[in-house]
Image: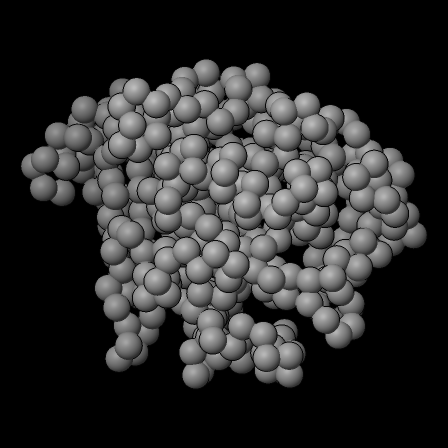
Amino acid sequence: MIDEARERARAAGFDPERLEHALGLLRRACASGAFPGGVVLVERRGMRVVHEAMGFTSYGNAARPVTVETVYDVASLTKPMATVTSVLRLMELGEVNLDDGVARYLPGVADGITLVHLLTHTGGLVADAPLWEMGGAGGREACVRAAMALAKAEALEARPGAQVRYSCIGFILLGLVVEKVAGEGLEAFARREVFEKLGMGRTGFYTVERFVEREAVAPTERRSSCQLGQRFWERLRQCGMYLDLHTADSVAWGAVHDENALAMGGVSGNAGLFSTADDVAKLARMYLAGERAVRTEGDEDGAVQVLSPATVELATRNYTAGMGENRGLGWQLATPGSSFGNLMSPRAFGHTGFTGTAVWADPVRDLVIVLLTNRVHPTRENLALVNLRPKFVNTVVAAITR
């Protein structure tokens, strides 16, 4: 760390040497192939302590150095960032009640499944399924039909509210609820009601908005690197869908990695969002602050509070105590054996993304950690980052001395 960075670390209550050790874990992992490159951001007490880019966006001669402005496919961070926050905004606007049955908005969904069940992954739904194959020929509408079929009573795998079963299908349904109630797409509602208000100008659903130049985006997986990806690549080629957002080697580069989300047009409640570490931190700060307003970047007097303190408290309380995994509304809460490690407080919340992304926030320590990588490049078989994440979080928290 340079002297200025050391002073920032001390001012935020960190031991600079210990924090440097934490960053060293990431740098060495990146150099050894755990991920091609990434961006790490650490904030405490409202102070930006670390914002560092490392490695390259890909491997080979075409590789470009990662910068702090590199845009990543954040995968399941879409769930809390776009879908959950949009549902909560609709609640605050009086458009939905979280205890409502989902069937009120999406007729055909099994009775007994509420919005809270979907938000807490307790709806009894299957975890995931290749909707793009199940729905037959076609794109978004075929996927919607397949998702709705999996939400019928006879397709449930458990009684609603009985167990935690992480379900992308449930969040696809939540995205459809937002669309039905708001009368517009999830991407439009989330952009206006969340991202623009928080100054998250580098966040969007890429295949719909084309919101940044593709050169700013880190590529993800080579579709041919696994059997599922091979089947999906053949479907894309047959349909002529989004081939321009892949390289000649079938590497997704701007197209969302998640197959169902891409088949739905790049916008889905479970995945599809692209963002930067800085933008992810802005949303995490809004939740972390609770009662404190979040200021839109560049507007000294424009204090913006996207969600009320009561709503933030509602979203980050534990709804699944004793069920093996602690869950808030969309947010994962600190749970033994999770990416949170061992030192985060019981009130900590966060989320991970399949592509190699994560955000953690601890209101007790006033701490935000963001780590964005494309660990699935060129293949999802690389799981080194999964083992590294809790160790990294432990070393960051251990660096806090006051």
